[in-house]
Image (cartoon, rainbow, N blue to C red; front, side, top):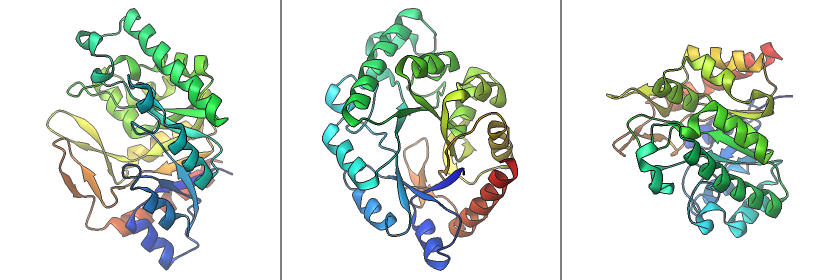
Length: 286
C-alpha cells in the first residue's frame, strides 16, 4: 500500500503524542543540516520509521565539483545504519557555481553543457550506488529565472536521460515542478507528465508562495491545485511513498532574502488537516 511520510517538525511530534494512531507511516529527516540533524533522527524514531533524504553538500550532492562534497560514504553509511532505507534520494541540483565555465549558458540549453553535466552526475551516481548497494532516486530541482541554477538540469528530457543512463528512480517534487514550469513557460501538468513517471518511487508535496519575481517553493500549506496535481500523477504512476514537506525548519520557512519566518500560526491544525486529506485522496485513487 502507498505510504505517507511527513517532514520532521515539532508540530508533527505534538500530533503523534496526542494521537499515536494518526495515519503517518514515516517521518522524513532531516530538515536541518548534518550532523546536528541526528537529534531529529533520535526524536523521530521514537514514533515512526524514518525516511532519510540526505540531499546536502558533504552528504550526497551529485553535481558538486569537489568529490568529497558529492558523496560522504562514512556519513551516508551512518544514515543507512540508523534508518535501513529501501533507497536513497538526493536533489538533481546544478548550481552555476558547480559549472562556472558555463555561466553564460545558465538559461540556455547547450549540448556541451548537457554532456558535461551528464558525465559528472553519472560518475557520482555510479559511486553512490556501488558503495551503498542501494537504489538511488533523483529529485527534480526548481529552476528560477532569478536565481543561480542551470535551466538544463530542470528540463524533463535531461532528467529522463539521466535517470535512464544511471538506472535511477524519480522523486517528483510537485512544488519544484510548479516553480520550474513557471520559469520555463510550461503548464504545470504538462511539465510533470513530461518527466519519467514510469520511474516514479516518491512524491514530495509542499505549498508554493508568491514573491515579487514569481512563485517559489515555500513549504507552506497545500492548495487545491496541489491535490489535483497529485491525483493526476497517481492516475498515471504508482509511487511507493507520498511525502508532505510542510514546514520543516522545523516550524519556519526561509524566504528569498534568506530570512526565517513562521510557517503559520496554526501549524498543527493545518498539518493534521493535510494528513487526513492526503490519506483520503490516496485511498480514493488506489
